[in-house]
Length: 110
Length: 304
Image (cartoon, rainbow over all chains, first blue to last red; front, side, top):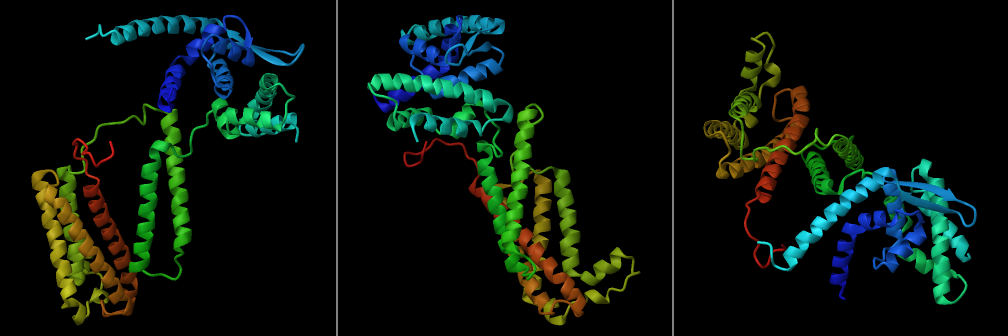
């Protein structure tokens, strides 16, 4: 894959990053485990992008977090009620976008 | 420095770019996350964490200031979208000061100092505008406006009358102007022109050009807008008058415009400032024509 392809792919991933992260936070995750989960699921994300994003989503009121300092100190994030609502809304919008894009790519749309 | 000391240094550099209220908590989490990442990278490399591994990790993470900006984005002092206008205004200040120095020399003026003040003032104005735009987007929302060719008739009338009174009337007959303005109650001997200046070709040219300016405003008044040819004519007249006023400043400094030394002393800097203003008007007119937007498809040799 060429550099231009990589740039296009990065742009594409950036657009769905929030949805991907919210979808993985139905169960509590800390930063590194979330990054691993996303990578294993086929969406590798740079650490410098993901960790600040978690903070931003929390400051936007979509996530709750708490420290677990029993072993290595780790901050666990999970969806709160507003995050659940946002996830549902974005999921619906995503499915609609997929339907539209499929129709574009398959040449059905006018 | 060992790997953990390098991480500590990196975390400190990220945290010091953050608001005080967030620093400690972000630093604590970032240090834990980097330790997790370092452990994974060491395991993958099959060796204990060393400087090479940690530096590679941190390079991938990004420059501390950039990482901090992802945690907490601060508004720019001057928005990148405003950079072009900031540069234009900065350059205009530099040109104005240079012209002022040439046309109205003064030992007291320090151009470097004045330019720094101008840049500082611009930075404050742009920063406040940007802050206000982010705070009240509706108040600063874009509004449609007419192009530079449009001039309201009221303004054209005002410009025509104002130009006819000042500077044309003052310039052509300073004594009569003073007598008229003060109903003859003020002695006008102080503004008597020397014979050499009164009969000079430069002064005749000045009267003609100022007269043409009045006629031009009258044309704009009739048309309700600038015609394409009139923009260049205005620029040429402003440029010619600017140079002429600058030259008059030199004549006044030599004491040869008015018969009294005091009047020459007062008039010299006024000629200089007026000349600078007129030359800036001319340059602005030329810039407007150079930057005129005529929507058209780009040719092959132009960047798209």
